[in-house]
Structures are given as C-alpha cells and as structure tokens.
Image 1 (tube, rainbow, N blue to C red):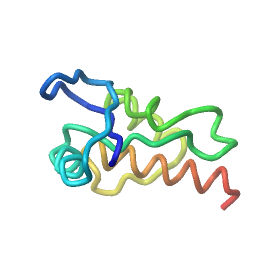
Image 2 (image 1 turned 60 degrees about the vertical axis):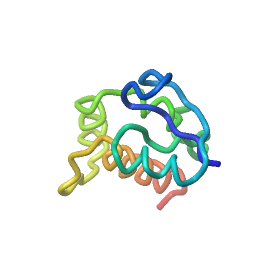
Image 3 (image 1 turned 180 degrees about the vertical axis):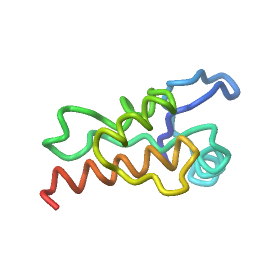
Image 4 (image 1 turned 135 degrees about the vertical axis):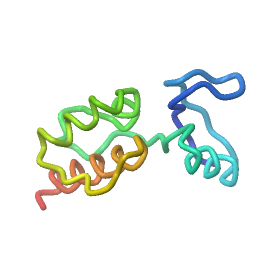
Length: 97
C-alpha cells in the first residue's frame, strides 16, 4: 500500500486529498502526474514542513522555494519531479550534508 496526495481531481478524490492504494495503482497515479507520494514529515530541522504541505503548493510556489533554497531543478518541469528534488534537498540540509 502506498499513500498518495492528489494534485488534481481523480475518481472521488479532490486535489490535495491523501489516500492509500495498492502499489500498482499508486505508481500509475504518480507516473501520470495525477498524484505525488504522500510522505510523513521530513527529518527534523526542516521547519515543520511536511511532504503533504509541499504537495499542496502550486508549481510556481514550488519553483520559488527551490530558487530560495538554491536547488538546481535541471530539466524538471513536472510538479512531482520538482517536489522530489525539494524534499531531497531539505532532507540533506536537515542531515547536515
């Protein structure tokens, strides 16, 4: 079972809602850009920001956070990819890397 947070409406779910699905369906939703993996809180030291909080932000807001943190987005244009890069950078920052 994988928990996902919807980025847009799908079936009976609205954008911003989180639900759990069997792995295959969750992975299809993520690959289609309909949802992103819902994670528990990021490591301590990330100012209380959680993946779910970040996932609820708009694409432009995520890009602004990445710019503020000096995160190189490379060729990432999809919200899920940018969210993943931000989460990795925040986790590394919290770990002192």
